Image (cartoon, one colour):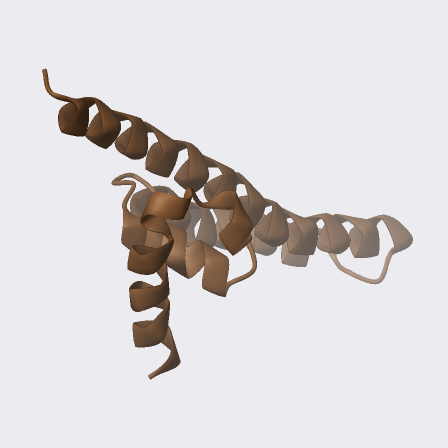
Length: 109
């Protein structure tokens, strides 16, 4: 296999890795909200039923949407992650940065 193919495989692997990091970080943001709701429940300022509703909404809503979104790693997802401050542009290999910047431009429009 030529060097381009090997490089392409390495880039795909890196994109998958970056998407995995972004997925975990974005999921963590949503879990932080849920955690705060557990805290409110433990203080008695949120009812048991409201907490259960929040858990169901998280599971059936945000968690599923994120799972579906991150199933096909791509440069687009990496660009979105950089735009959302889930990743830094410096985390992205130099060879991909121009592509990421182009996708980011579409987020700004």
